[in-house]
Image (cartoon, rainbow, N blue to C red):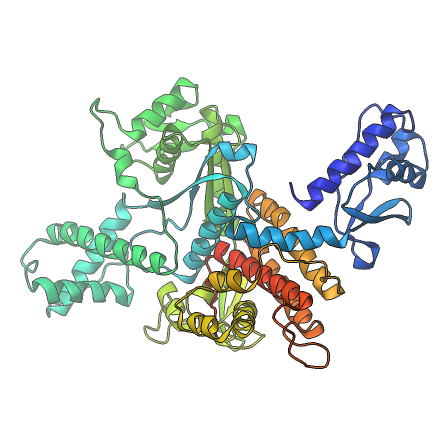
Length: 583
């Protein structure tokens, strides 16, 4: 139980006590619901329960607040309580409570803030990126990769059971078009007068694939018919593009539990049934399938969709939606209880019909769609439309090659998914405070440097050379149960308050599918650390004299530095960003 929850328990007990002795005449106890005051001068936490309860209690809000305060049980957490304004209950924590967070962070390390929640018992399928294997990943895919991977990390830390999946769109005519496009480029490169059809993939990467085939296999496919060449190149190009996507995503630190092939939905089992036929039968059994003019329809309008949807055309061709119906049914049949899909904002009109299909099977609310906005690329404030190398779109691989994985992931997580991101390439490469990822990583590296300076020469040299980790170094130079009572400066208290916020921040970021909050948290704690380091000397006193190794203030402040280092590293790790010990 974190500090906020513990305080809410105390106030809840006070309300129940006041109800039992008749001080508050209420039929039902209201929740304390603490929140941070807008002005830190008003304390650490505040509750509006007095104002929310006044009408029911037939009393003035301040009088209700006073009764609640009078009934708060004796405890060591609260230093003072003040009733302010129309009836706010403002609580100031005892310094020892905040100091205890430092010890807790150092003891729990990467497990700090880890939760276990009832909803975590549900098995969640999180599907994201899922790009067509017909072209390179673009920067928008990079946003979904960072968002999905970090969302999974945060949710797992909060206690959810999350399974990550990439849906490979490898069924349908788009792959035929892709194979044919590579075939035409192949023939052109061999000197034939072949013309690209109107429907084609015209990017330079198509010619690169064709040239690779020539380099490996020469003129092997030259004498085939166009149809034979298309079929051969369809599979070659598909495998090559899929492997390219795997490699780029792995380089970004994004790993999936499953790469699910759309083709598998159409493969019969031992009974001759496919995922498609099983999903249709289950929907038909519920009364939501009908035939009209030779086509098979889903009666989605009965569940709130604007119109019914065709699943199988009159000519027997499966619609794109039919694959989605089969795929989502298959997910549920694999034992998942809740499905989360991350889609681009252009899929907004597709959401309702997909929600309806889950409801048709008897799983209302089982599908959750997270829609994400675009990424706008800039270079020194000027919009970037095309790649310098190819004259076409800037690929995710090119962006990562130029600015690095850390900057790419951090900046992709800098805003809520429902807001566009303006990604300035030159800012991402800067090594100063204007670059948020550098600013946060520098705080971590600075702390590691402080710990090395605080260590005996032999240990410092080992840490410098990487023979021991910073974790090992910190444990050697800072006693586990050191006295933290010297940490009373306002800059120290502010830093500890921010640490204490972490468990609640993680729980809310997981619940709201909002990993962007970690980037805000990381910048805030880095800023508070820099302020602390300016205000509070760690290794020297106010006269710039070296503090002795056993000086209580030095030891306590080193412990605070170490706890801050752990918090920054943990926050960055949940974002998939590294925490360097040197910069």
